[in-house]
Image (cartoon, rainbow, N blue to C red; front, side, top):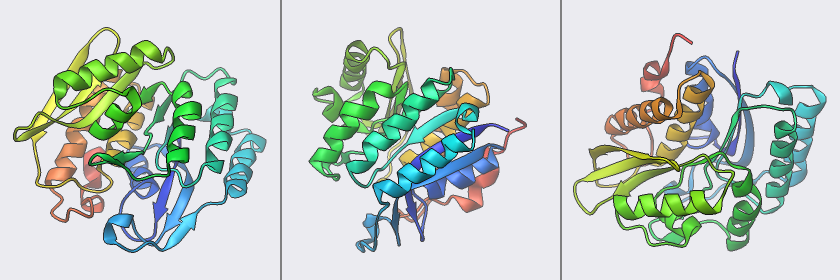
Length: 271
């Protein structure tokens, strides 16, 4: 059975972070190894902040435990998403480096959750640490429109500028294989997911909703990682993740929550 280590948020109510990754990957026949960076009652979109970041020493103990168990060489891919504190970053980076040193050819997909709607919603120091320590280790990143502009230090106003920003990141970050920009708007009635590599780019277009849905980026990244460990090419895994994520988004009538559980059958494969 394939295994994906997923380091991101956890909520008691709703579907973001590992509450998305765990059922999605399980539905795909993949074993999710979930490590929770924060534990909250619900995501902040509900207006109630109840819970806390997982202490860094707890995360270190869990990741060290995976090393002691001899599981790390058997991890097929790693996802990191929303993190709760700067102290977590170096610990996660160390585990990824140990995993790399086992000779794996699996992908580390960094969903560097920084912000949206033209603003950071994580601490500036945490953003800086993720960029300094996790971005250099990443094979693939999955930024939204704001995050792509922030990471590249270039304006991103449409698909063309998103492609330019992605190519700039690929030129300056030699370890990156791909930038997959999600939710890119051209100022019309559509949004685009864009796969950008050094050689090419490819875009998928969907009807724009009045508002985004929490957890949709986590869904896309989980589906992407799952497709890659099941042997799909990057193009095919991106297309499948994009199409399936948008199918769930189209069926989600509450902007605060994905209609996830009632659509898990979409993710089942023969792998």
